[in-house]
Every structure is written in C-alpha cells, then in structure tokens.
Length: 477
Image (tube, rainbow, N blue to C red):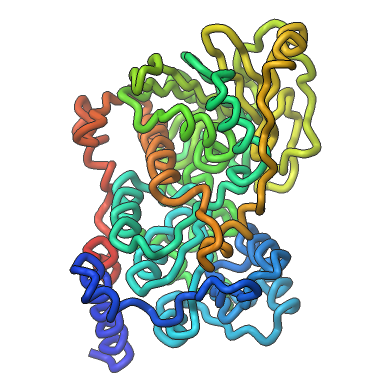
C-alpha cells in the first residue's frame, strides 16, 4: 500500500470514529467535539471552507463574502484552472486552495468551522458526511443528494450531531415568500389546500439532444487541470465528455436531478414545509416526452399524491416542465409574462417561456398564484384579492438572507430555515419523482417503512448502485 493511501485510510478511519463518538453520552462527545466552534460573540466571523467555487459554487462564495460574516480559510475545486474557478480565485488570491475535499479537510481541519458545498448533485453526499463527521457545519446546495437513501443517511448524520448547523441552499427559504406563507398559514388564510401545480417551462440544457440515445457520449481528452477521478465521487467512472461538466451534469440520471431537482426546491418548498406534506403515497409520470434511459425527458408531468395529515385534506402536487407543457391556467390568473425578479435557470437565460416559473395553489375557498424563489403569493382573481385585503396578517421582514442565516446560525445567533430535517423530506420527494421519470411508471410508496411497494427495481433504486471502490465508507459513518 502506498504511504499516501495508508494515510488517507487512517484519516477516514479517524473521521468515522469521531462520527461514532457522536452517538455516545455527552461526557464523551464533549471531549470529541471540535474546540473551534464559534463562541457566537457579536462581530465574530465564521472560518469557512468552500468546496466547489465555480458556477453556482462561485456565486455562493461571493454571496457569503457579501454578508461580512465569513473568513475564508480554504477553497476546493476539482478544476482550479477552469475560467469560472479562476475568476473567483483572482478575487481571493491568498486563500489556500485544494483539488480534493478529503485532502483539504485532512490538512485544514483544525482551522475550519463550516463548509459550503456547491458541486454537482452526485457529489453532495460524501462531502457532507465527512464534514459532519469531523464536526463541521454544512451548507449544501439543493437538492441535498441524488438518491433517497443518501438523503436519509445525511439526515441521520445531522441528527447525531445536534450541535452542528445544516442548511440546504434553496435561497428563497429566507426571503419574503417563506415569511408570507407561514404568516398566511398561521392566520388561516391558506388552509384546506387540495391541489398544487408547480411549473418550470423554460428550455433546458438537454432539450434538442437525441432522445433515441443508446449509449453515453464518446470519450474526449480530459482537460489537464481537471481531477476527473475525484469529480465522480461515489459514482462509477465514465469516459470524460464536455457534456458532463459545468452544469451539464444536471441532464443525466447518473449525476443530476433534472428540472425537478433544480427548480423544485424553489417552487414547492414553502408549501411542503408549512402544509406538513412529508412524503407522498404515490408518484406517477403522467407525461415523459422523449423518455430514455440516459437523460431527462424534454417534457415531464409528474403527479405526487399526499395523504390526509394533521386534520388537513389529502393534497396532490402536479409538476410540469418543458416548453410545450404548461399547466392549466385558472380564470383570473392575470399576467403570464416573465418576472425579472426571478433568477434565470443555470443555463443563464430564460428562453421562450410563456409562463413564469411558479405555482398555483388551490384551496377550498381561495386560489393563490406564486412565483419562484422568494416571490410572494397573490390571491386570484383580483376581485377576490380586494375582498381579502383587510383580512391579511402582517408579514414579518426577514432578519437575514439565506447565506447570513447560515453563518449567524453557526455563531449561535439564529436557527437555519432550511436545515436537513426540513430540507431532507423535500429532497426525498424529488428523488421519488426522478425515479418515476427514470422508470416511466407509477410508484406506490409506504410513508412509514419508506419503501416502494409495487416495483422491486424502483425500491432497490432508493439506495442506488453500490459506490465505487474506495468510497464505500461514507455510507457506513
């Protein structure tokens, strides 16, 4: 065994031991806890390491910098030579940099309080598990992970470490829609919801690809600056192709979560939380234009059925994506154009969309129209909105954006608004939706056992393929 491999295995073994210690009585965990957890004093900054600093990860770095609460102690990216990565490094030239998150945590662990994870969906899991096991607070981009079981293990790991802060990066969960939805629900304005449509009808990266695909793209030379092996994380190695990196990973079942995983957390997050929806009992792919075994359909309609709960009626959520797949629009909906306040998709532009990314919420007495991210709800039609205006409660103003909320929580000043126990079940809803897309079928789900009861293959896919050799330990922490 090479010395480097031996050291790496010893490091991972020690990290796993620290994770196991977290489940022991407090007299043990106190000794094992990281001594560098912030005191929470006013004016403190959080020692932050950022994993993934290009594209969305780079945007996160800049957003954390703007809070004035972050002290960057390490940057990590599998491609430090990429243009999008270099753009960030030029702004922070003195921050130590790494290509492998394991090396960074091993060498810089005693200087790191918290990490941010802005990498492809398939890589969220291992980084999160290792960081939490080492006593680091974790901010991870949405969705939490690529498989149902990975999300389950991440929630359990977070529960083992109640002193650690977790936050999923659905930024609208700290903006006006979050506080409005909660206030309207608490005041009884939003009640007896039986149906929700959520829609993202802009062009996606894979639109226009050959849907009769029979194999993965042809191999291309690996860029000299890219650590292609580490990029894969727990997934099996693929031949390099440019259509796997820089956001293209989102197109493929092997790496990403498609339109649902990308935008679902910005559209149904507040309804899922404040209506206590939990996990569905049935998920059906009603439409899957261009269905194939490799990348996502060009248009999808997915039906999620949620049962009665806590004196609330059963509720269906129907998801629509694809430029030719608009949801039914109720009378009195109003303006259907693009909303400049809604961030564009990761491809950089909103193309030929006929409807805002958003949702329509149908209750017994009222219908609500909403956008994406932090966009607030409005009651439709306008006549009904005027009738209800005097009955609407005052909505609190957010004390912090999503990034400041995470850092203030690390300092003990706030609680995160999208911790793993909130974001986990939401992410698992997306995992079930993706399974229905992948298999082009209807899945029956048992909420108590968390098992798919009508399809053995789908049930096995809750766990997914075994991790590749050398990455098994993250599933055993």
